[in-house]
Length: 284
Image 1 (cartoon, rainbow, N blue to C red):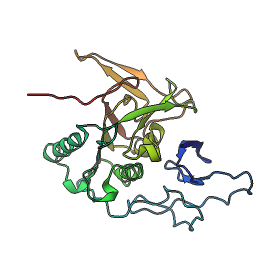
Image 2 (cartoon, rainbow, N blue to C red):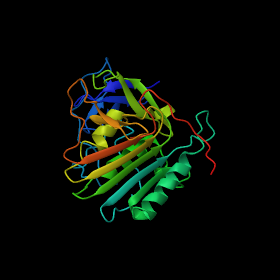
Image 3 (cartoon, one colour):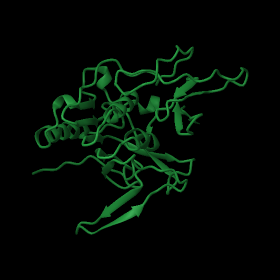
């Protein structure tokens, strides 16, 4: 069973895998140690480890006696970004499980085709995470999706265009920090979510929304259940079929700023926070 703990530095909720004694926050990179009541206080936390995903890390930390499962990046080089365009595309089918979906990998392939052929994204600047990938570090696990999100925004410059696409299961969990108007966090369900837990919207916001500087644009397409506010953006636009629209204020009751650092983020969701999405068949 997963244990929910707060980061010792920024208080972001973290899901501790079974048996882990420490965990590194993907938001502020601080290490939170889970205290054993029979032991003394933990040593001061070292800085976050280096990564092959090329996001500017601090100096390498000393080796921990009980390393967290999240204190290292996957092996292998991500594709280099060209032309100030970069994309992460996730498609998860959960094959041979009771959660299996039929269309998500096809969604991912269609999105890549669109970006390459219509919007001229170089293939080498698109990171695909699907179960069909032979490279284990390109499978849509929780760890790999986290590292891909860091790679997506690292080093972005004014004028850059970024895309984050996710097709798979989404869910909700109770929020205990006062950040949600409806009292629930939205979550993405990686391929290994039953063992490693889900990715909470607070982490998604802190990773790919808040770091964006002026003149950097991110488009996110989230095709999942409960995806209405999956990026935790401060404002939500509702539009009806006639084109009429209204803006809703979704700034959290806690007062925490969930917007960018001057950049622009536009997120398209498959449904509202209290709704579910489903596979469908369309014939032309």
